[in-house]
Image (cartoon, rainbow, N blue to C red; front, side, top):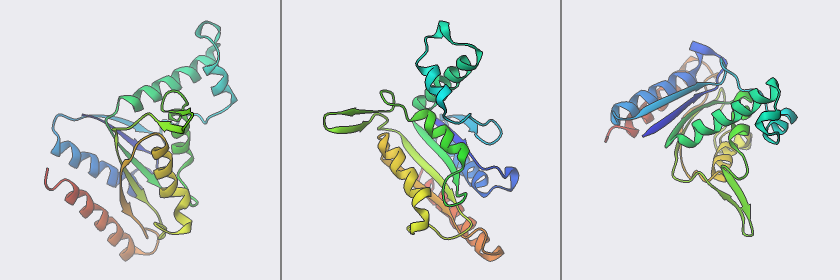
Length: 202
């Protein structure tokens, strides 16, 4: 099995989502020793945001692309190939200002491509990425899951990846991380317990 591990927090070693996504991948690898893991750090190796140049690069034949368009086209192709090759994904998604980090949105914009990961037909849209498993490590300073304030975070991710055809989605959640030491410790311990239980039978 091929696993793609995505981190997006800007906080480095102080990041709760990075800590938990690392624990999750380690537990998954222990449960499936034959697993291969690809890793992308969207904070330290940021993907440029979707732009007019991205579209121009896609619509320009390879021999006519200048250096900037070549870079855009190669970045899109590499990001897409990495995503499509994965059987499973672990995506660390902290909440920033009631939504996902901008660098994670930039990555999503590179993989949400008509004709490659979804298509429109007479009956509406069809996701083309069914069969992949997705685990989202969701962290937040407050308590937002299931609340209107969480619509742009977990709800968005569930809808977005469902649009691409991915329906096997689980959340590992740590909330209340900015509400004092006790709440932070509780949120992290609950998430760690969820990870251990998830792979206990493996």
